[in-house]
Amino acid sequence: MRAMAPKPKRALRRGWTTGACAAAAAGAAYAALLTGRFPDPVTIRLPRGQTPAFALAFEHLEADLARAGIVKDAGDDPDVTHGALVIATVSRAAAGSGVTFRAGDGVGTVTMPGLPLAPGEPAINPVPRRMIAETIAGLAAAHGAAGDVEVEISIPGGRALAGRTWNPRLGIVGGLSILGTTGIVTPYSCAAWIHSIHRGVDVARAAGSPLIGAATGRTSELALRRAFGLPDTAIVDMGDFAGGLLKYLRRHAVPRLVIAGGFAKMTKLAQGFLDLHSGRSAVDFEWLAARLAGLGAPPSALAGARAANTANEVLALAAAERLDLAGAVADAARATARAALGPAAVAVGTLVVDRRGRIVGRADG
Image (tube, rainbow, N blue to C red; front, side, top):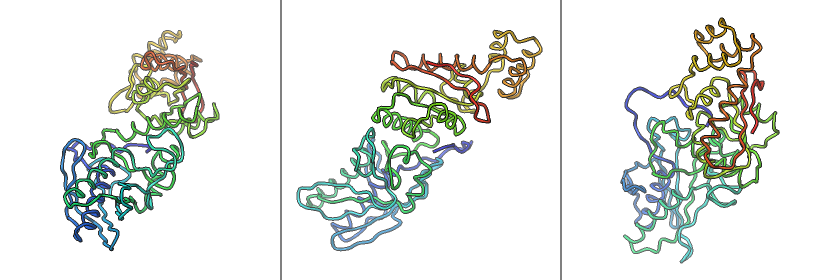
């Protein structure tokens, strides 16, 4: 995930996670395996008690296996998996084996430690696994069956879609992850991005990385890589969610963190904002003028800063006066980050990067 689409102004429609779709597809397939008929729509119970119904888009029945598919509806959330077909293949398994899981086409496999699943496991997260297992158990009890089955989840085209997610960086190869903790997608909640930030930290910690680099975007990420030679496992695509990163690191510390971002976003962090999105925080030009005053800027530069339309316009004014405004912003941004980390023993540094990818200000922890 790299960017969020603009949030519509109308009332937003909620959707369903891949985990909910997988559980519903598995339930429909297992019901067909037991009865010879696919329930359509199929109803499941979500972790918080809701009981949504899902229409089937695909079904296939053989003697010892059944397949059912559901088209994921993410509501009004700009989810990369919206419209994807989630297929569950349920096969009879040996007595006493319970429910086991396989990654089918388009679903990834975990290859690195640090995630909630061990390396070698299909990337079907714990809550979706529990939803599927509970759905199977309920049907087995209702029909007097043992519930010993293998469940394979596949998403045609998932390998290509995974390239637009964090999965390659997290060491999940071959496709997408089956996600969701509630079964419900809340539009523009940014929960998926923040979840990915947390998993990125987990992977870096498991890899023993002494330094994590957190970037607000592609340009600042490239600057981090050049400055520190960091591997993928040590880079976190923080985006606008400085708070999501720092609050997680408060409880899951790493030895050293360097945050890199463009001048405007780092100015907002320096002002004390932990959400750097343009719709939820803004650059304060009076604040920038005060920083310039502290650096000895002449009145003309202060007036120009107050009347500026963009943060980069103020940065150019400072450069013309040979004043290290970017360094002052880096110092203040580092102070904000350090305060957000609380007692966590994390050494913090910050980099301010211009539009050409040059580091124009830094504060070292």
